[in-house]
Every structure is written in structure tokens, then in C-alpha cells.
Length: 257
Image 1 (cartoon, rainbow, N blue to C red):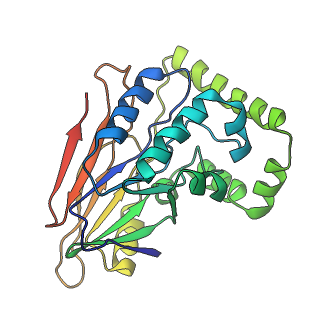
Image 2: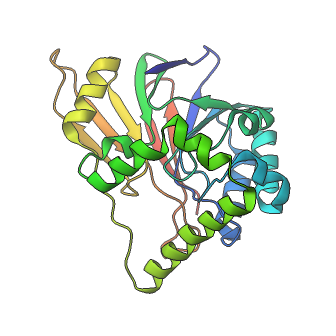
């Protein structure tokens, strides 16, 4: 678990995840752009799946939409601390893109030391142990060999794979089959928090925003798991929520629309 020590000057930290940005959904991009331009937070930490799919950093040069996203990130990264964590859709984001955006790549999980509290941050997919098929797939695609083999393909070949993924997703939507995610494993969450000596685990991925109480630590300290919302400005009701942490340990969920 990698540490992130908040400077004493930080007063608020914003956390978002699962925006699944894509050119075909400009409304969500617009809400995100306005938020990134206007947030008063000292840091914005994006806990995975900022993008619907990522086939390699070299795709940016050929995509006006990705260039627009990079411009938003670059502008924000110049005035606040910007952290990017890999998700299950955009785990191929590379150091070159992160550096170009004046951002920082966050390990999964990351322990955030902010004020008097320790917060454990994760995308959340590694915690969903009941999804056996996905965990096997995750182990395969996160290996250095698979990454190397995939990124060594031509950009057009990688984009074809991405189109196939999007077509499958759209077909499920047309059939009315909403994506159902396995929930985070409670024992694993508790173990992670104990190892990090943290009070609260914050993650996305499951698209089931809620605050969960967990069994207390052996010291009697209460533990919690907070799940971030996904974003979809075209949904009814629309979803675009920020979790804001304050230096005094309080938190607030902000609905942008």
C-alpha cells in the first residue's frame, strides 16, 4: 500500500470515479469539465475508470475527444494536486499521459494521510472476490506480458478491440440488461483497513454509492467503507457526485446535477 501524505495546507480533498468518459456522451464530459475548472478543492483524486476504455497513450494524438480530456486534466493539474488511479476500463493509462497532464499516478490501494485521519483509497475491482470470471481476467490483463503484447499491436488493432467492447456494452443496454457488479468482500476490506491502520476504505467500481459500517478494529475503532457514485448526465435521474473530505475528518457527498 502506497502512502500519500497531504500537505498541511490542504483543507479539502475531492474523490470521484467511474465517469466512463467517451465521445458519444458529451453531457457527462461537460459536467466533468465544469467541475474540474471550478472545484475549490486542494486535490482531486480520480479512483479509476475516468475513461470508458483506454487502448494506449498514443491514441490521444488521433482523438480530438481525448485531447479535450487531456486539456481539462492539464489545466486542473497546474492549480491543484491531481491524482489518477487505474480502473478496470483504463488500466493501460501510462506514465507519459499522466505526466503530460501534470498529474500523479496513484497505486491501488493508496493510504491517504489527511488531517488526523487515514483513508484507504482503491478503485475497488480487486475487492470483488465473488466475481471469479472477472478476477481471472484481471490477473491476466494486469500482467506485464499481456500489457506488452497488447500495446505492441497497432493502434488500429487495439481500437478494434475497444469497438468490440463498446458494441457488446451497447447490445446489453438495448436488451435492457443492466451491468451488475459483485460487491466488495467484507473480510478483505477489513483486512486491508487493518494492514493500513486506516479507519475508512473509499472505492468505486460497483456503481452502488453508499456508506457502510464494518466490524470494529481489534482496538475498538469503528471501520467504514464508502462507495463512490458513477457518473451519467443523461441518466434519469442524472448522476454526477463528488465525495469531499475535510481536514477535520468530516465528509460530504455533492451532487453536481
